[in-house]
Image (cartoon, rainbow, N blue to C red):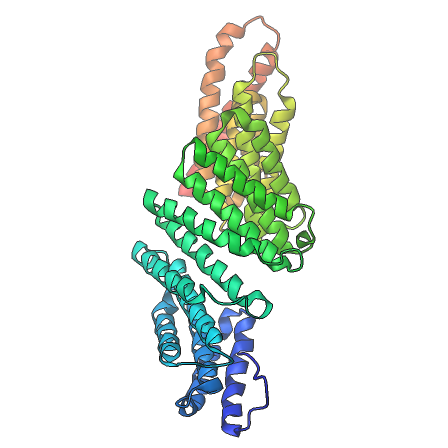
Length: 460
């Protein structure tokens, strides 16, 4: 709730505003456990303020802002609060549409109304169903129409709000995903970018941050379209975002580092998916993503998510380069980089699981599966040790929490490698390395038996 510019003469209005301001302060904490109490404070303040809104002016504007704040708290509850949130947004729209002017000027009324529409659209965007996304686009259209033609506003508020309308419109269209929607999403980003670029990004780090987001998201949309031209457009978007962020003071804040890491990760993913001749470049992008947030992945789940995906990208790039290696090439460094990424990723996922967050288990299983493939193809004599360290509870405590997909990947890798080495064995008789092959076969047979026993115990 905005503080009144001047003292409120009516004590009853002041009491109403006190409830609304308490609600806004509670909402700002982002504490889900306070949501019900916060909504109650909004309801009390709105009820006390309602008798004074018939004459318009500031009380009517404060009333609309209270409805908006109430809706945003309900929106934060997800699907459970969506229907009631939409009712509050609609109430705010009705109030502001009926008013010829509220607050300081007609421009503020239009911006306030645009703000309600954009937040209503964000609620639908988060819900994510196709029909809700289509409705969100209409909400963002209403915001854009209201804010187009406004002056810059205080602290460039109106212009930034216009760019936000275009960016969110593009996001909704990208999620809808049809070729027509993706093309329209690109046009929306192209409408947002000139507005953002005209803002003082050298003075305001948040404007720079959002401009980088716009370029990154434009790149993601271009990638979704597909084709060589779209790949070039996607790379342009990612590179523009990197230029805006790299070396800038915006990286002094965690959200700046997180954004830059996401851009690097998207660049790596694009090259991995579309450009087999650029695996070295993809590796460098994935390493940059990992290094950008080094030391922070153990502090914030969002950082951990990027760090795990970066390590997965490092593994994918290594696998592609190993597949292209010729007999006799020295690939020890590549193998070491990939297995280090696997080990680091497994440890990070387990750290967060110990803290009660199991969301990274699927990525943990995928990294483990990749590790089994690397060892099976390039260092089979280490496969048994790797598998048992991660799956045998008698070997390590972490194995007690191994997922079913991990167990399946380990069993399959050991069986497949054992079969392959047995087939090789007859042709290796008398050749150098035969002793090592025999040792690996023995370890794998023991691992195979041990995994069978572990699985039987789990099933029992």
